[in-house]
Amino acid sequence: MARDRVYLDWNATTPLRPEARAAMLAAWDLAGNPSSVHAEGRQARRLVEDARHLVATAVSGDSRNVIFTSGGTEANVLALTPGLFRKPGAPAGRLIVSAVEHASVLSGGRFADDAIEVLGVGRDGVVDPEQLRAMLATGGPALVSVMLANNETGALQPVAAIADIVHQAGGLLHVDAVQALGKIPIDIKALRADLLTVSAHKIGGPKGAGALVLADGVSGLDALLRGGGQELGRRAGTENVAGIAGFGAAVKAAITSLSEMQRIAGLRQQLEIGLRQIRGTVVFSEGVARLPNTILFGAAGLRAETAVIGFDLEGIAVSSGSACSSGKVQPSHVLEAMGYGPEVTKSAVRLSLGWSSTETDVNRCLEAWRKLSSTLLKHSDETLLERF
Image (cartoon, rainbow, N blue to C red; front, side, top):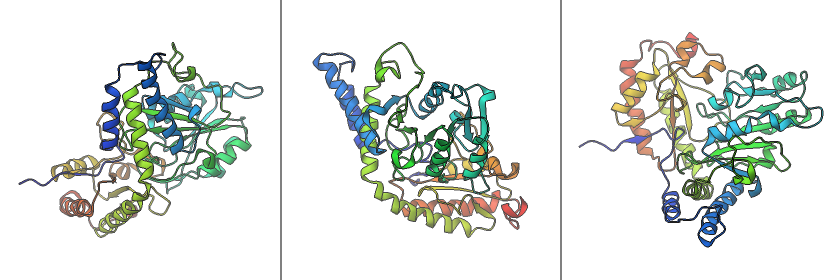
């Protein structure tokens, strides 16, 4: 009899929480448009506004500053608009992004290609705030985008320190917090972020729902979708009531159970100890603060695409990194930004845990890796870092 599958790809997407499913089913039974003034419309509007309050509370923001979108990518593109700098003496189009950002940020949103500047990271995957300070010393204020937690390595960025530097230079800071929500506490005020992106399907909500949260006083945001007055004119189109309701229920459950991440961190530690017992295995960004659920590892001679298939055949779902490349296994741009060569960037495998992960899952994964490593590693007498 086949064993149950083990899901270790929570950073790509999470299972739907029961609370989110129930909220969505209830929303689908409502006929009203949330922009209508009759009783049915007001019922739908109440679901949207309740969810808006829950999302705002989860990041210590203000409900009036939450803009619902179709997901993290749309929220990022909405945030990256030159219109934020429509003030006397401010430039119209300078954007600085870290080299390890999500593809939707690296592409620059609505900024011109020649207006995008890339902020490097160290070997540990963390931004150097002083490098950013040097970049901002010339050229005038900028919109800067640095993620709170990396989706591949789990490395946390010094966002509050970055915010101080950006604000001292007269700029604004956008923070992609998609991977961090539900895993670590988030406070938009403490981070001093001006714009913050979150998404539902990373915390047990539905795919296709996200939000951009603004700090108080941020204005000049150009609507990406126009033609209606929804979201206070900042995002046209009838709201996805069921998706938004599911988002609200998921974020409430995620924040309520945030202490569960202590248990998850323990499982991650067990995984890392077991991985390191296999000759040549390297865990990336292990020396810096990381998300409690994320491991990115590699080994000399390993090919990520082969490893992902091998794990799958063993009944274990893992990833080679970001799940935003149409299912293609590609070299990690994050490891490339960290200064690693092609052999390393092609070797990375990501393991990410979630609320239903167990010690049995960890043991199954390690059992599979011991089996796979004996056949997949061509240079078992070397370590990845010794070669590169």
